[in-house]
Amino acid sequence: MVFWVFGYGSLVWNPGFEVDEKVIGFIKDYKRVFDLACIDHRGTPEHPARTCTLDENEGAICWGAAYCVRGGPEKEKAAMEYLERRECEYDSKTLVDFYKEGDDSEQPFVTGVIVFTSTPDKISNKYYLGPAPLEEMARQIATAYGPCGNNRDYLFLLEKAMFNIGHEDDYVIELANEVRKVLLSLSGLSSPLKMKASPGAIGLDSTLKMKVLGGAIAMDS
Image (tube, rainbow, N blue to C red; front, side, top):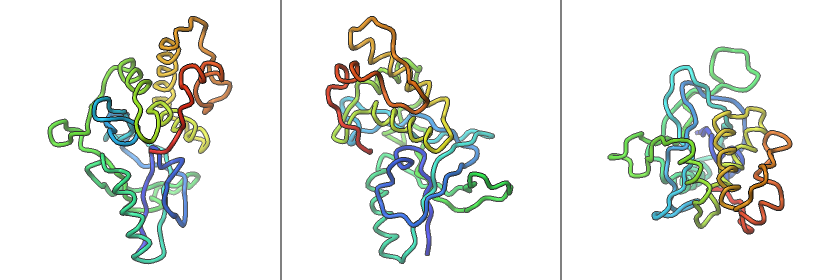
């Protein structure tokens, strides 16, 4: 037996389990949104973080990385148990078609790829926050933190990871830049924000990072 899992959030830069193959590509009819609460990694129950989930959207394309696990039942079981612990805020496992980067065929590279998703309903899914104004989400992300690090690091690392695979997400960039504005405001500085020298660079300039982030460690969630 072989299984594939699609990563669109922190799995893009840090799968955290033993994989046999990594393929860059996309899935169709889903878009990446920051509508899911995280209360045990990048946030707390009192101040939840915002992390990625997928929103069904006809015609949309979501880029990321697909990981293959081979090697027998024990290896596959260990990988899935790890993923289920890590993705505990996601209440669904959806099977999707995955399309490989650079493959001109209209046929999917792999079918039946597992992707962790969340039900967009606040009653049936206690972790679903739903959409919010950009400024509100940015302030929440800029200030939330948990045992595995800051919520803002999760966002900045995702921004960088998407740049590294050559498929930046405009929504992620817009949200990350809004978080930078919030951090600048919270720092009490009035100087203009020093924007990224190149897409995918993390955070602010080094002086401001030391003042605002205070030595926070960027970890996976």
